[in-house]
Length: 250
Image (cartoon, rainbow, N blue to C red; front, top):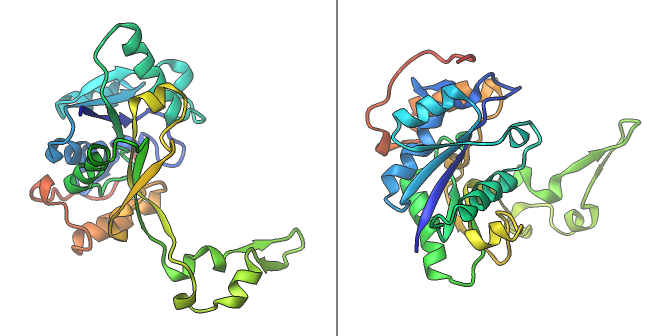
């Protein structure tokens, strides 16, 4: 079974300018997920899909391939499902050999570990019936769906799941819930058929919550730096940490 890594890394970002290249502990954000994919040994090819010359240059420095995505898939509303499908469609039209599975290596998930990549690929090897897979992490009690509220226009608040919460106010009585982790993959034929990265049936693996970190806002950089500095997250495949001040521009 052949698995490829696809790195979606467009140049535009409103929350942090050139977010995919912003330094985290002295390394461009792009490096983290890419190096995890390389160290996993589970991906025979890693391709960075980008519209940016700067991101393309960094991808080439990392030793991965670059695919220039079309302009209509470079905007804020571009769906990663469509980015992957267009890329595979193009290769199919060229009669190129396609992988069996595509794994997304998202730069905004910097704490991906090589073992996370390997575990996800193993799901597809072990379960031929599975069309997609992603990893998940346990939702803490304070963020459990039964604790969620909605606000009305006049500011009054109510629980979304009032009946369920009335039956189970403590965490022991609530069903265990999970949120998205840091990796997702799908079979190529599912992507080409338009089923997307959540094609059913979908299988999950579980990771510790600290590795499911999503870097989106400027404040997330400082938090990620602290997690690395304090050893809350360790990424042995990267080697010794590179220290540099947090910067919000690239």
